[in-house]
Image (cartoon, rainbow over all chains, first blue to last red):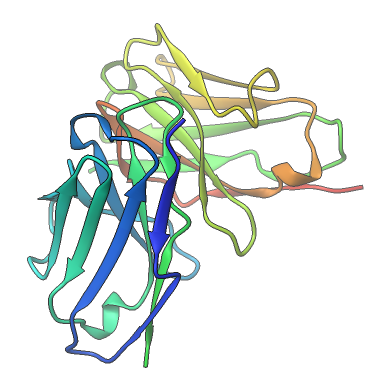
Length: 108
Length: 117
């Protein structure tokens, strides 16, 4: 069973700043089947990144994903007001699928 | 346009049962796998179950194995989750999701299940 650990738990930044979120897997993620989701309060999650680095339809290019094996990163190049939310990584290469614990990006 | 609408949530006593449904539109359930994911109040996301696109295989989280059953009715384009032997720790918002391969690419808005006496 793959366990995903996200860090930091909370990231306090100002609009316009760069956000770097980490997701570490307890073992190698098959074929880089790693996704990132954004969730705002009271809403369902939304797919941002899949296959570690591919942006989902309609996702702005300020969001980018990178990594392979056990270490993955989500980068938001310049934070917009609507980007303040909770972000989850998920591996979907092996059952049981697993989510990380989430990183909250809050306004500083 | 893909749309997923969950229903069937509510309050149930410990040990009880509940059946959730997810009505899909904008795509044919016969060609896509489907997920259930849950989120306890104030907590993170927990994957619950997956049914393959052809219904041939089903996968479950250890926390629900033997108690929950994922199924689908392709004639109604509807996904279901039968939940038995419910426990207080099953209290959560339950989301259904459309799969592309095993990637969860579209989510419903969720239905709340509360297990309490």
